[in-house]
Length: 131
Image: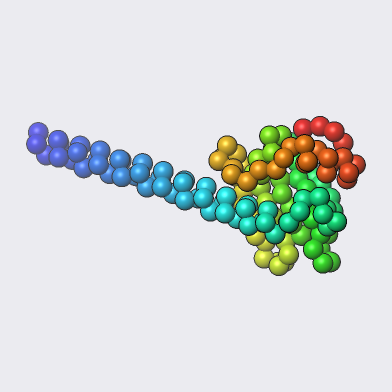
């Protein structure tokens, strides 16, 4: 009986440790994604600058892209209707893509765009109204 209790205690302790590690890993991953997205946002500079080059749409979000040198879609920020930047791409150093994404955790996004400014930029690019 004592052995069964001891084994049960060890199993319970191991399960608790796994939960703690999993939560830490999730938090660390979210922090890394937010840092990558923020650094790409900083590289864009003024959103309404002359390098604004294009847009794309997915079912989950809309994206704006900015030109750098010969690359017309070098930097890209993707955002949801509330302005949370949930994905960012830096294609300046192809073939090495720098990519941050919070698709699976959009509420954790810390970088934001003003939704009104994003709408104006999309209209400037003649994107259809929507999302």
